[in-house]
Amino acid sequence: MTTRERTYARANQQRAAQYAEIWIVAQPAEIAAMVQVASASGRLVYVGPPQHMGGDDTRHRRYLRLRTT
Image (cartoon, rainbow, N blue to C red; front, side, top):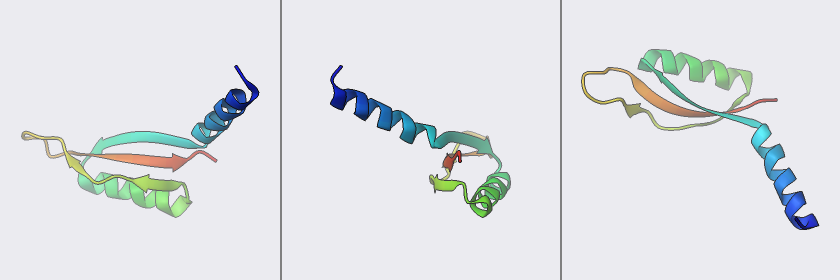
């Protein structure tokens, strides 16, 4: 592995360690509360659009990206 490849790999690991990426499956009101808390704490980086689970299931699924530090 060249020096450039090692540097690039190390930088990618450091960037990945800064964030936690999660999918939340819950009722819309519960997801809204979680997003509000994450936003108020300053950890929220990105929140994806709600996706209906389908069928008779009333839950939604959302992607969240949070800062770990």
